[in-house]
Image 1 (tube, rainbow, N blue to C red):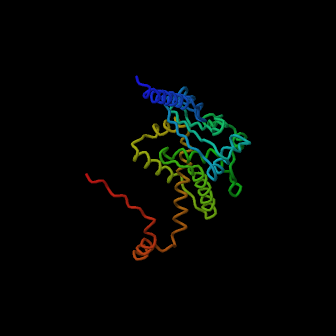
Image 2 (tube, rainbow, N blue to C red; image 1 turned 90 degrees about the vertical axis):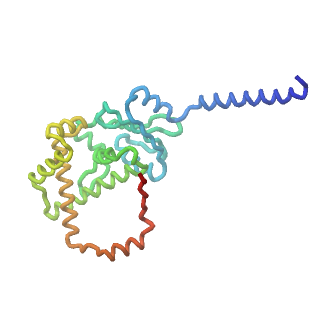
Length: 264
């Protein structure tokens, strides 16, 4: 080995040592989600884990719902982790501090299915003309959104939907609109036929998900009443003509997206 080659060899060795140190440092570096991921791997190996980081307006909107379960919650930025375990009746939510990695709040709805009215009142989010809006109602809407379609605004949109539906139902009552038991029965029979289910199978499915046939009937009744309310509101509205539809499309064509079909 010549003396001229020695400095280059030393440089290469030093570079290799630096690379090795950086690799070990990166591999050993912890993240705020480490504890959450370990919890998931250890206790929920067959479940689905979804995590989103919330900040700004989105974080503040969701905080209103989180504080119903965790009084005093005030983080302006945090991770919202959701575990959907087949063995649990409801998903579990973890609120994680992005700085310390500590779990600030755990929302386990499966323990709240049979809670008393006094406990439920602690989960009150709002009142609409003296009618309460509970977190459970909002989460029921949110949990019906496929995980792949959820965004940072999904919780707020779920709350808005619950509030809007309550306002419509209240207005339907003022208009004297109602749904008969026969109409509810017919809607349930149509649902059973379309899904190839018997009433007993439906009741079993509802019980597995922590619901009941009574709650299902109530939801069907409300859906029918909402549809009747919308029909009543729009019955005197003249449908737009083809020319008006075309004119609207031409003025707002940038708002419409056409997805080309795959050629097979």
